[in-house]
Image: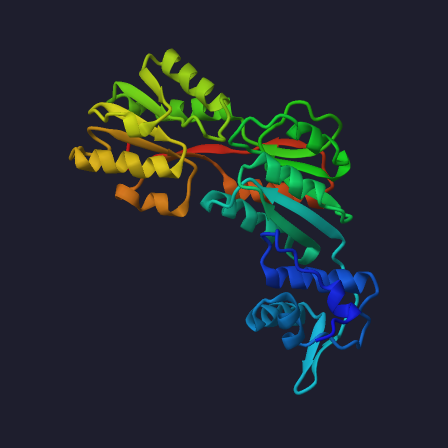
Amino acid sequence: MKKSSKIDSLRIDEFSATPKYQQLVNAVLNAIKQGVFKKGDAMPSINELSFEYEISRVTIEKGYNKLRKIGILEAFHGKGYFIANTDISQDLKIFLMFNKLSAHKKIIYDSFVDTLGEKAAIDFYIYNNDYALFKKLLNKQKNDYTHYVIIPHFVEKAEGYQLLIEEIPKEKLIIVDKKIEGITGNYGTVYENFEDDIYNALSKALDPLSKYHTLKLIFPVDSYFPQEIVKGFKNFCYNYTFNYKVVDDFDLEEVHEGEVYINLMESDLVKILDKIIALDLTIGEQVGVISYNETPLKKFIMNGLTTISTDFEKMGRTAAQLVLDSSKEHIENPFELILRGSL
């Protein structure tokens, strides 16, 4: 099947985490803005696009149906899809890059996308905390994006990532989740204050914490979480005279009555609960559990897990608002303690 120039203009990026149906929507809107498609033009058929890009007909149809819903396409039985409207108000084109897509990162993504609505085309990438992939994805972008929205976290020490970010025009840059030293110029950011956040959250939990004698923070060696969390944890324990320990490998750690376990990684939470259940200890009475990062499921686990967490939904909304307002503000995101039965 010979590929037409119109099909060629509708590019699908295999590296992108943006759903393929949404990539198709963005590609059609971009092709209209560039004059490739004009009002009344016939669109490539669902079969043509499915064959060319080796994606399902259902995916193509989902993209076309979304374009129909926003008034860009119309369909005629037996004839196919046609451009019905070329009046596109979508002036924002965003390069969005997350370190991973966990349950809480999905909350950020969903609120970011929902806040922008149809005002923006979003190319979404995930680099899995891998600096080499981060560099590759950032360097391969030749598109004229209006904004680059980035969450920068790396498992290994990643020398030079600040220099990569420094090359992005500051008027287009939004950094999410953490502040970065060494970035010059005026740019927008919504961030967590990791040291103060954990200190203040634990301070609000002093009453239930008072029935325990030792606090243990599970902080794996290969964690991408910032060391400021450890500093804030130690300061709290020192100022309120708790025994404490920072555990880098929970597999080697024994669980004892009178201790509180604070997990950062979801995999460590499973291990903590396994060991507590095996010892037949009562959570919330004999041992305490505090889990970092609120997710919907945690209120149902073990009669409710106490969490200390930034407001991920608000973080996504704030990042989107920085884009919409072309703002260069630095905004600290709210952090909260949610007390439940595990403490």
